[in-house]
Length: 326
Image (cartoon, rainbow, N blue to C red; front, top):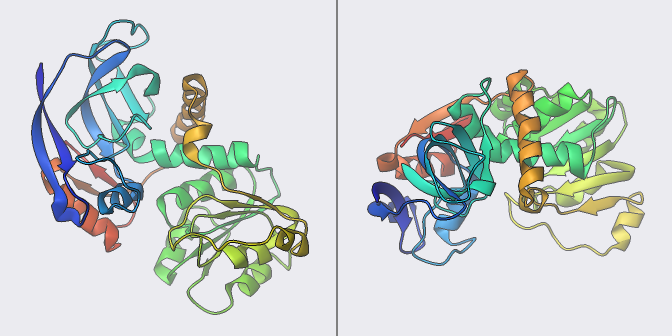
């Protein structure tokens, strides 16, 4: 048995609902690995789950990704050994902890060219960008893509990686400051969608050409106008709802807008198979090692100050990735 510190919530609500609990962590079971976690990634889904917008059975832990060092392995685990550097996502909530038992099939080895902090900051977001750019639509050189929330965590990675693939990248963001961040992330053009007729600005930026693909994580505030920015036979990828759920539409609207394709994908089904997940992660780690994708760590917090991490994220007081260092 090992004593572990882990963040728990007993009821939904504000950041003050999170508490650090001390628990007895058993030896890893069959197929499990025990980790000493070195860096924990923050994602906004953590806020949604804490609030109860995406409800979880209570009491519950929080957090979906982390990096760490293998302390011990359970029976049947032969691909990892004590001392290995590993990372995970989608291993069930509970990443906010200093030690944790994790199914081995949810782990990926961290290569030498990637730090623990990079892995924790980029795995969830980067794997999302990976399937969007490689699986949902294989972005090709010369294509025009439109990325909403281009200054956000996934948005910046999408812009960096798409630019590296040779696309012409138009990004949107909610302020001039965020547009500057989007340009630094690789956008050829960044447009403030809180001002004026932003679809017209998109067309002007592209010389009158609509986007081959629109990546929309904003939802309610952008979705219908995203259809107006998509080229005939183009694809609208609705992968989030930061402003609320996208409005329901009649299928015939896609015909009227130019025989468009519409999809609502999710990162988890794309990475449910362990072998596929590891191949996708290897693709991401290659992009990180080569410098194609990078993460700016905007703030670091501890388990004891995790409430401040959530407050900072909700108030948009930080730029870049947030990490929790146990």
